[in-house]
Image (tube, rainbow, N blue to C red; front, side):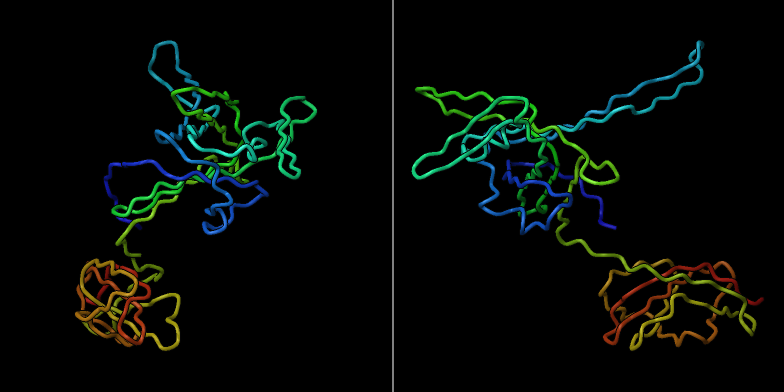
Length: 272
């Protein structure tokens, strides 16, 4: 599990878009210049808004609140954008091109495409790690085209999310955790009284991989995957271990270099 880090998000990001075909592609496929929707001015916002309903008895003693609806919107103001994306900005937009000319037609309910688009906002952070926010939906906020003498003609985007999978997911928030380590886990360890007084017999599942071995330490320890366990005791996987009932032992599976692969913790049962 990644460590909990309190952080202050600072800065804007990049916005990419591609037609959604039923699954979310990998980052390299989404985050290309061809998929860049525009350049953002004054940042972007992602809002999650639940609708709730509360039920309570007449005396206010018992109360229950349930979520009846969820809404997610992504908003950004694009200071630079391309008219070739007008079919993304408008659900009835149609773009056609010929030599030296691009024509956009907008309007007509019969022209609504009902296409879903994947929108990816990337917030780069060299210190804390990049954040990627992905939603699937359509621009439901419309747009206003403005041409001003002393200002830019921004195009404001407001995307309402739709479920992107069978679980009803509306937001995928993917965060890099720089310097984080994956904790070793995956071993189930049981303990029984050993054959002689003051010993315990351990059983470990699943069995270790070929070429690996076991190491044991006293106390609850959760090594990182790849951590070399130099101060642990080698164990052959069958011999009884000296212990007292109630002792906590940690068993790790290590590779040929002594680096942790898996680990598990057990409370010992020893023979009196």
